[in-house]
Length: 310
Ligand code: AMP
Image (cartoon, rainbow, N blue to C red; front, side):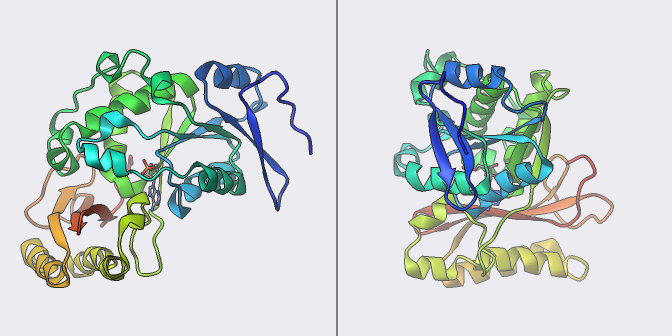
């Protein structure tokens, strides 16, 4: 199969060995937009999957969902400096372009966009859009990672303006991020044009949510990391028989006994992340955990009931 991409000089072609699928890679906005303006999607909707690379099966599932939906899929790989409140975390963020491209080609991704920082923020991050998210950026991840969600809002808004997709595919693992992006779409008037598709969290066999950060775990750390998900499942299974504060204490003790340091184990209204002291079965609820294993900070969550509009 031959790709017609002769006019796009920066484009590179990747072929999934098994399926003869062609995937096109761009580094420059102008080239990407020239490609998209040539209507390669032939009438299909455009599905966008923003990522920071170091891709795994969780990311792949978002592309797989886009492929299953029959949309033209475009995935970005950009480690966004403005969403890292911790410089060491940014420096340590894994960068694995070769395996990432192979994974995306294998997943059936149509286009990859891998811009440099100057391309996304030509005048620096300070000059780019600065959002305020009120309560949502003061709790949970917002509280523990000050400025993080401003950076997320900034980069997703910038990428949406470049790509102009119809559907945004995001992972439920980063649930608060999904609510932040939904809020950003409202604030920028994009919510009419872009729909968010929140996809289920993909897990390892022991329940550990797949994450680019998992590769920083040592073998003994990895061996205990599944406890985070075990705690979420235990809260879920006991929600009708125990108070949340009792389960929260149980989970804290279990994690600490194994060498995991929880930052928060929280129960919240799944529509807006208002924190709850105890279960309220009349509303959709979510349990969220952030915990450190050594220097590696992991997050996970479980929905106790699905909110209607999420
Ligand atoms: P990241 O590269 O970590 O910024 O993630 C890019 C997208 O992949 C986000 O929408 C994440 O929520 C999603 N994602 C990350 N891990 C998983 C997972 N284990 N399952 C499903 N989606 C995920």
